[in-house]
Length: 243
Image 1: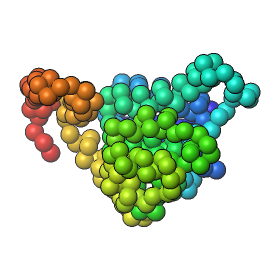
Image 2: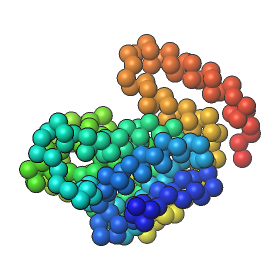
Image 3: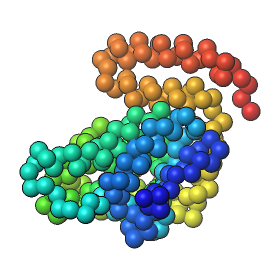
Image 4: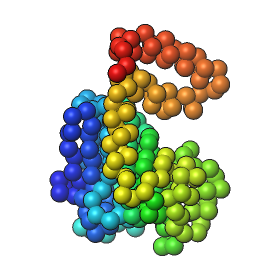
C-alpha cells in the first residue's frame, strides 16, 4: 500500500503521489489512504499537491479485493464507499488541493481532477469518462462532477466516452490551467510559492466559503460572506505586511 500511494510532508506542502506507473489505476485502499491524508492535511500543511508518477495521471479505479463482488446490490454497495468517501474528503479538505495532470486522466481520475481546488494539466493530457463503453453507468464519477462542470459537458463525456483535450477540459471546468508539458513543474512551483505567501486565514477562508455558500440561499450566502469577511480580515495574520 505504501508503495502505491506516497505521502510526503514537504515544509508547508503535503505531497500525495499515485505510484502505479502502469497507468496509476487507483485501488479502493489507495482511495481510502487518500481520504485519510487529505482530511488531516490542515494539521501540518497549507496545501496539498496531488499528482502521479509515470506517463498517466490515473486510468480509473481498480478493484483490489481478492474475491468477486457480491451479486446482491445491497451487500455490494459498501464496496464503493472508499471511492465516494475520497470525493467527500477532497471537497471537505480544509486546505487547497492542487492537482497536476499528465497523460491520460480517466474515470476516477477525471473525477478527482475536477474536485481539486486548483489544477494544472499538461497540454498533452487527455480526459475521458469511459464507463458506459464497458456497460457501467458512470454515476460514481457524476457524483463528483455534477457541480463542477456544465450539464452538457458532463453528458457529452458520459455518453460518448471520447477523450477530450486539456484545452477542452479547461473549458468544461475540469481543470484550471493548461501548461506546456516542459513547464508544468515550474508553473506548479510558481503557484505554490505564491499561494504560500498568502496569509493562512485567507487560504482557509476562501475554500471554506466556496464549500459552504453554494448550498445557501442568496441572503444566507451574503450573510456568511459578511461574517467571514469580518472574522478573517481582523485576524493578526492578515495585518502582517506582505513581502
